[in-house]
Length: 219
Image 1 (tube, rainbow, N blue to C red):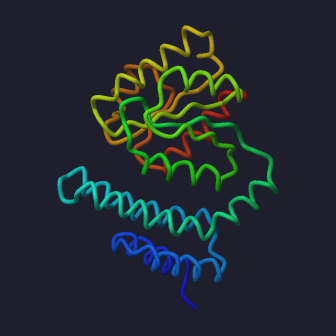
Image 2 (tube, rainbow, N blue to C red):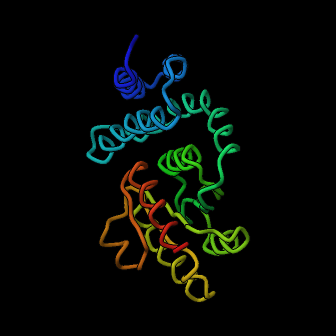
């Protein structure tokens, strides 16, 4: 019987082949041998991340990045019922509001993070893409969010992340809501400049940091 490691390698590879039906088939096999949703998502995410790195270095086109995202989505669809089942069984680890900032329509990385957060046990409120500052603030206030996450792939959209942090300050919410940012355009230096609480360059790191931020907020 193939090992979990073998399935992980196959999933990483098949994402790079941009073949949704094949991804679905391998995910079903992985589930049948007891591989957890989290392990599956991590493998799928790694495959997408490889394409993302190639895109960033000019070795791949945006169309390939989109196809990799679609292939991952097909795999996640297979395990979504199990993720929902697990969430119903466990107490929510926290409420996360997340979206891609105004002026940016990219959502592949954001969607990967959301899937991993839900698989881990967080309650996630996805605002989608091209999200204005006031929508981030209103939703965070409405659901009493522990963490607000913002994604930006385009350099020109980076200032929007700073505007949201400033809006949290002006509304008196900054002490109650932790902020994490990510996306291809984001750097640790930028996160420090706008006084975000965290920065992540991939979904696995992002989820780990959000767990820490939630712990800090509740302490």
